[in-house]
Amino acid sequence: MQYRTLGKTGLKVSEIGFGGEWLERHDEEHSVGLLKYAHSKGINIVDCWMADPKSRDIIGKAMAGCRDSWYVQGHIGSTYQNGQYVRTRDMKYVIPAFEDLLLRLQTDYIDLGMIHYIDSVEEWNTVMNGEFIKYVKELHEKGTIRHIGLSTHNPVIGKLAVESGFIEMILFSINPAFDMRPATEDLESMFGGYENQEWSGIDPERARFYQMCEENNVGLTVMKGFFGGALLDKERSPFDVAFTPVQLIHYALTRPGACSILCGYDTTEQIDAAVAYETASEDEKDYASVIANAPMHSYNGTCTYCGHCKPCPMDIDIAMVNKFYDLAMTQEKVPESVAEHYKALGHTASECIGCQSCESRCPFGVEISSRMTKTAELFGI
Image (cartoon, rainbow, N blue to C red):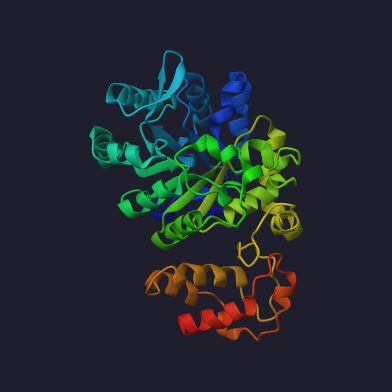
């Protein structure tokens, strides 16, 4: 298992994580066993947005005796009322629900205290100017939550979270289909209407959000990476082609700022299929060819940082050079942090010999050689 530093938190999280949403589907013994099996495979981060007592109890029992080797994303604002989940900012429900989370997880702290599910600007403004955010910050000051995070499906809210300065990481929905849709406050609309989609590559607002996370060291954990399973099924995929779990995991983890993808599991075999990413070949990870050959897509001319351009005779990490170029081009002045990361690469764009062998392998027709020239001019190296 490979581990990545989750932005400002400094936590080393497994690239493959555990999304707990499906735990309540099974009997307790089975679900506790799934978490323990995942942990034995090196998975060390679990998301608990669920308000139901059963899921929380399962996670608590699975972590018993090894709490310190798990990182928990515990949500604040996810409550259980009259036997069902309710998202709320009403403190008479919020506080007891969070205290219940601690009790059932058998812990006195949550590693990542998640401001739960904000998708609208109106709700962002309400949360950031009321008792809810005061409570979150009090929990942080007391150490009850070690780091402050937020979950959203809307890049507009994601950008506001990055700009806030105090939100250290974000749980965000990432998959190739979502990335082509413009920002919306209506999550359900993201799952339909693709037959009327005007395909034009990654939505600029989403691309900018990812770049801001990279620039500001705000780590991303990923939800909805498989588009509810639709991207694994040709008949349901909006691209009219099927991806593999490994390809979708690689897609998510190549977005700027992404650190861990949290998959849901019903069986140990599904855990094995996700963890297989760590030993997969470049061909097995290759999502780019799938997108490029899909009947419906328009990524042409856009670098998706897929690494298809390798190998370079000068050993340039072309995908990373392109990533830093894109990050720098969004600013009037090249950010110092971006410049330092670029210069720390083993080989920079100035070493490009213009052989264009990379271009022959790029599925999206990116004019890499000219980008290398522009990058060398921009960074001066």
